[in-house]
Image (cartoon, rainbow, N blue to C red):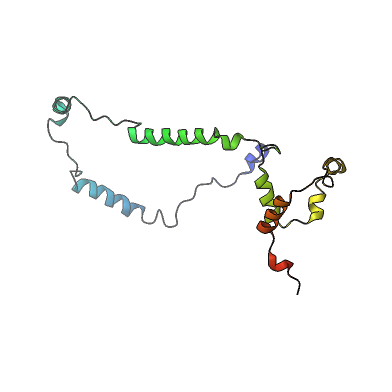
Length: 166
């Protein structure tokens, strides 16, 4: 509420239930009658209980075992699991598989050949990888083949059925 409207409050804000004062006298007399008839509350402290409570507690403490049960926060099994997980993570991060950098010099010729054969690359796609300087440096025309080498290559790599003319 705003401060300047406090003097305009007409209701106190508290309400009584309907018919509260109609049965008020009857409820009050019932409570008084109940307190007169019931002398005990139902809860009773034994006589001398509070006088001997300190001795009773000290007897309980001294009769218990002097070596209490110790529950360790870190047992060996959980420590072993945590250490093995940390070791595996350290080995994985330091493994040479993650640290190796692949360069053109580190590739095997067989790997490149297998890639070209298995990927079904066209000659134009392969030629686009070479520059004119690279192609000029390769002297294919002046290379001479041995007859034996040529024959073994043809026998091993060519299918004779494709060469037969019908």
